[in-house]
Image: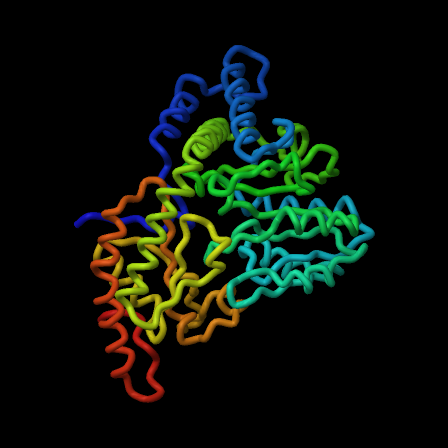
Amino acid sequence: MRSVYLDNNATTRVDPEVVEAMLPFFTDQYGNPSSAHAFGSPAGVAVRRARRQLQALIGAEFDYEIAFTSGGTESDNAAILSALEVMPERTGIVTSAVEHPAVLTLCAHLEKTRSVKVHRIPVDRLGRLDLDAYKAALSPRVAIVSIMWANNETGTIFPAIELANLAKEVGALFHTDAVQAVGKVPMDLKSTAIDMLSLSGHKLHGPKGIGALYIKRGVRFHSLIKGGHQERGRRAGTENTPGIVGLGKAAELAVQFMDDENTRVRSLRDRLEKGVLKRVPYAIVTGDPLKRLPNTANIAFDQVEADGMLRLLSRYGIACSSGSACSSGSLQPSHVLTAMDFPRSAAHGTIRFSFSRHNSEEDVGRVLEVMPGIVEKLRDMYCSRSPGEEPPSGPT
């Protein structure tokens, strides 16, 4: 059975060119990049090249504005905690109600353990930020604004550049989790007021366990991880040379394939959405129809459980995901759709199909071939259950 992978917002296939670039740094060029001897020199050169490759992708002014980390979660945590350290007189954080748990969980922890006030800005039914609420939350008490560039579930793109300008008016730092946007949305950070930006290698066909935090020149920064002087003292620990090289190559390829992401990949996404809406009644595409990532289709199916759809899709070799999480034996709708005030009957049945440049027309055709039957089967099971009985989570 042919496999169809449509869960690229969760993680991507490592590009073969990325693997090829990494391999020498596991074997022949294994020196420490911070060493002064001949074994360390090739690794040091490779790390500097990777920094420039990332600089080109996000439009940073200087390559040293890039600090390598273990991934998006560490970058998010480092940015927020640093802001609170360098501006101790400010105790406010502004974020959105639909952030990734890497931000929301940290903010909830800080509320409980420190005298921190967190402002969670609501969104509308299309997942768009309430700009009036955002402006009202800004004040000289805010240390940092941390709002994602694009939502990982719906693909809705936020006006990060505009939000950064507004944050500057009250003297707050601005950080954006751009894990889903980097490589899909053209960026020129040197022309913006964005202070810090998080990215992760495994979202753009690089390896897992490597990411970066962009820190604009002149922004005061307090390191999260203490130890040696790597990364200009911003992130201690021996550099993950193979991972860094892989991230750099992935960034180089992302620049090369940016147009493909926004044309061919977008057309695959659009074909899937139109096909599903035509073939499956009571389905709706979530998110902003005009400002959305080109690869993301988040579709809500009324009166059917996402868990059951995922199980049957997997039997057909199709991998995708749901924003729902299983908690205490009950399926809860995602915090993103809850914040969007989606009806529970549809929020429970939301499936995210996320594409990459490695997907094809055949992948779309396969989903459209099996999706109507899957939804019909599960709806029949849902409607035939006894009053008060829980909806089925999948076929028995």
